[in-house]
Structures are given as structure tokens and as C-alpha cells.
Image (cartoon, rainbow, N blue to C red; front, side):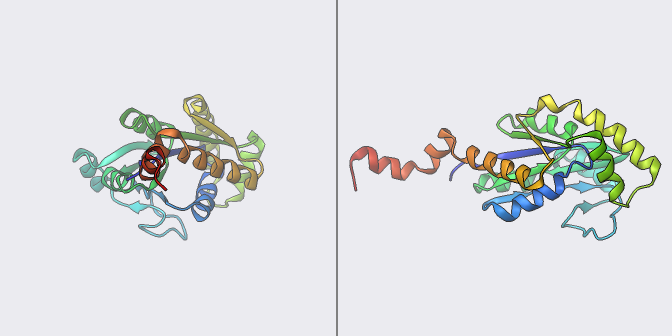
Length: 207
């Protein structure tokens, strides 16, 4: 079975990470997006098990103590975590996995899985970020101000990523993400494992 890649996608709130990952999933085969567990209350239109696995704080703490999370972090007073068994199962089956997590979670994953490929998505400007957060119509002024402060803190960790994509033009950013995944799949060590039978024939001179 060819080895798969664990992709970590990090971005400040409002940078367009979720929309880009959703579009990427529709364009790239053999790719799964991990559904995180969270103690945050569902927003309008969100579906349990699709957008997030919504759990109570007590349930989350019990899972964390049992070692069931690949990573976990606190964001805006709520807890988020990625189920370790599911991620490992997908990777073992040769399916690439995307984790949409903040810098804290990304750091935890890299410590446990150094082979992970980390991508940071940036907004083109503070003004654009503010407009995107305001345009959602989901948060009040105080919440938006808090998210902007958190965004600055998040962006300060951009240098920890392997790749940086600026989401100014959505289609361009999506194309760059797709190219990144395709390039990762063409790495020599990945291809040598995937193409082992073909290479064996070529090296033996067989048709």
C-alpha cells in the first residue's frame, strides 16, 4: 500500500480555510477531511458528524484522558480535537488526510507525525480579514474584535508551516493547494512505493 500524506491546514478565522478545503475535496481524489470533535455549540446550518462532532466538555475530557485525540487545543474558550484512530486508519489505507486546525494543534501533530505537510493560509490584508468576519453576520462587534486579536496571534506562527498560500483570489489559492497535493504525491519515496511492481518489471527488462 502506497504511503499517504497527512496535510495540516492552518489559518486565522476569516481567511477562507474551510471554503478552500471544501472545494479542494471536490476536485482531488483519494482525499479525506477529518471531522473534528468540539465543545462549541453548533452554528445555524451546521450538522453533527458533518461539520463537527459536537460533544460536551465532559465527553471531550474523557476522550482526551483516554488518549483518543491525535491533537487537541482550546480556541475562543472551546475545545477542539482530532480523533486519532480515524486519521491513522485513513493513512494506513493510502488515503491522504487534511486536518483543519489552529497553530497549537498543528504543532502537536508535527511532534507526533513529523512527515506531515503543513500549509498556512493567509488573508491578503487586515481590511480583507475584517470584511470577511463582518460579512458572515454570525458574530457581534466584541466577538469580531476578539477574533481579530486572535488572528494576529495565529499569523505570528506562519513561519512554522512548510507552505504558505495567500487567499486573495480564491481560484488561484485553490489551484495552488491542488498543485501542492499533487506534487507531494509525486515525491520519489512515495512513487517508489506506489510503483514498486512496475519498477520491478522495468528493472528486470520484462514487458
